[in-house]
Image (cartoon, rainbow over the protein chains, first blue to last red):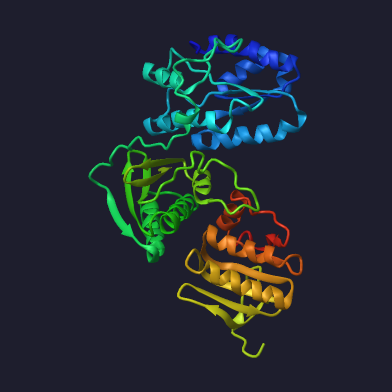
Amino acid sequence: MYSGTKDFVARTLPFIQGGLKAAEPVLVVTGAEKIDLLRNALGRDAKAVDFADMAHVGSNPARIIPFWQDFLDEHRAGRRPMRGIGEPIWAGRSAAELVECQRHESLLNVAISSETPMWLLCPYDTTGLDPAVIGEAILSHPFLTDGFVPGPPNRDYRGDEASAAPFDVPLPEPGSDCHEFPFGPGGLTTVREIVSGFAYGAGLSPSRAADLVQSAHEVAVNSVRHGGGRGVLRVWRDSDRLICEIADGGRIDEPLAGRERPRAGAAARRGLWLANKLCDLVQIRCLQSGSVVRLHMRI
Amino acid sequence: MSSIKGTSGGDGPMAGWIEGEPMYEDKQLVIRHTEPPNGLSFSGVVDLFNADAVARSLSAELAQHGDLHIDLSKVEFCDVSGIRALVSAAEGANGSGRLVLHGLPPLLQRVMTVVGWGELPGLELCDCGTDVI
């Protein structure tokens, strides 16, 4: 926890410098302004630190875990512990993005387990963020710290098992201008045509429209193959977003579905991974009624 | 090839490919033999619906003819199942023949890279047609 940008630098700098002193690889993923401040404060040492702009890496928060995995894979052979700072939540996040960031923070406990030789610091700005956001952060982090040393185990942490539990928080219902199309195994062409029509109607560029069509198709394929053979497509606009939702009777119960880089030889499901890469935001829910996947594109 | 149906690529990168009889046809896809080069030209949609059939056809061709050049410039849509069909045929050939993919539409090329099938033994991506949409 920190309050304001100055405090951010004061609290994270010793953590970074401690890593450098121990010759540990350090990766910092936060906003561009804070990266500049840290670079200045580090001086010549800044060259030894990897920086990445969270607005770029984590605009869709589901892309952050693979980013950390790449960092781990790159440095694992060095057999040194690693340090990271990741700040996915900032005050300007939309409500839908915020929920997905919070899910991401929980899933980090699954993807980067306590045995992983990495110390990952997740800074939260108590002056800029809603108290409810801070409250959720306390539930999703096994340790709380002032930024210098690891704190004692956090008694309020919900635990690894609960962090990996199916995400069953319902999504807000769309407004009245929502179009609904049930589809079956033979309806994939229709799904593509409908999504394409809405994408062009909303003014998406041809390549972003194609990205959305491809993603919606792959999710609909999952419905046909794993979701009981059929599903329901819903499409609507929500202020500056075009949203396509595909619901079916299946269960997406792998917690890291869509967040694990497919290996060349593996036959694992690639549709959700692809959607996360091509769409601005992907929301996956595993409800009592079945699974729901929402694809968001900024208009 | 006894019956020549025209050239595959028009004025595009695949100009000069001679197309023959269809070797596979369904309601959304036609695959024709080409010669030269020794290969196949796809037009239409490859997806979950026909991916297995396409994989079988490709495997049979690879077993018979070795290296195959595939013109994908007229593919309107190809999903992950379709890409998997290409990949599994290439893997199944086990070094006895490669698939050389030509004229990949840009989105298809991007999708192949994103899903981790951009670089595989037995599968070669020719950049001759990246500007073909």
